[in-house]
Image 1 (spheres, helix red, strand yellow):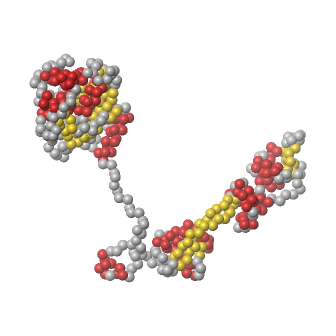
Image 2: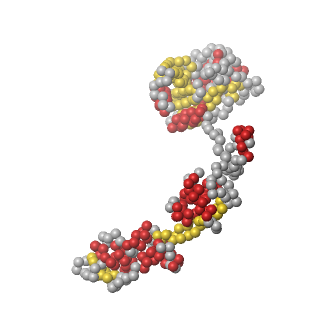
Image 3: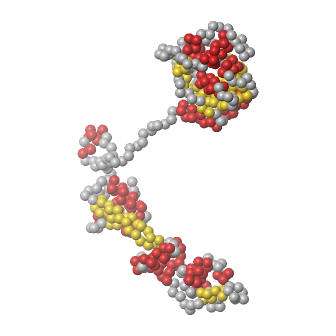
Length: 463
């Protein structure tokens, strides 16, 4: 809302005139900025049909800053002429003056001065006219006095070209009385309250018209879930470290890729219905790489590659069972097998962040599904030291610098390490991930070279 005093003064001014008033003239008479009057007009328009305001525009000529200077002190060429005495002036001295360079060329064009280049003391400038008429200043003074209409278009354009005169468009309002005109401002109600309805006072009150064209307040929506923000942060860290994202869009996996390919025995507790969701339709998977499947079966049941295996009767029907994947390491197994099929091995760095499913009892820290974050590096002669170095780099980017490693057991990694970080808030060490070097019993059946090692680590997005 504009200043109430200005609004009431504007209303009183309109009440006194018959035809109306121009906002520019009102601003000038009140000695306030024109935008103050414009604000008052807008405020009155919001109150309904109190006033009528017609937007008008007009053009007039104004002097630029340089043009104002010339109107006061004379044109550059006239000041050059007046600076030259009868005995002349060295050109070098004239050029030291602020108006010398521009005024010299203009005065030469007007033939007011001449240059004697053969003078003993160097080029010297002399007057060639006894007196001059500073027409540029005279024209600018006319424009300054509001008589620019006395100048023809050629003269105005010439002054505009010299950036001494500028054409300005001025917008103003022609203000007249509206149908609901009043010399005083009555505040309109914006809200119908229960008290007004109960007392009936709403009948005497004036309400502000509802603006159906106004845009509503944008609802707070479309925000990223906190887990999605953290997921984006993890993904950015992996990409900064040069990792490529694995395709993880298959929530359903066969037990072969989820367990057997990782050298996890078929009798392992994680493979029963208390820990894993099994599918009933389709219950079995088909189409495994036959040679690879036979090598996996042999290393489980008989051993190989320096291992004695588990010495049990490996069953195809167990490997065929479809499940909701319990970890994204099943995807890592597929990617490493694909890598092994290349003619020439090349080092890789993979990562994935996606959902996994566990048939667990729900509590404050466990759900039936959660997101697993996994990183895998495959290269020749990698060691446990390389794994610890990569983990330090990874967690440092997360802002976690205090790390400890504890030996652990995983069916498909040896050696294995649990990763702990010191929690400043809880004042204790908290497990933040698991890691290890993939076993030869997992990698060699895939066909990877013997000198290739694979280090990996994983953690949960929620837990």
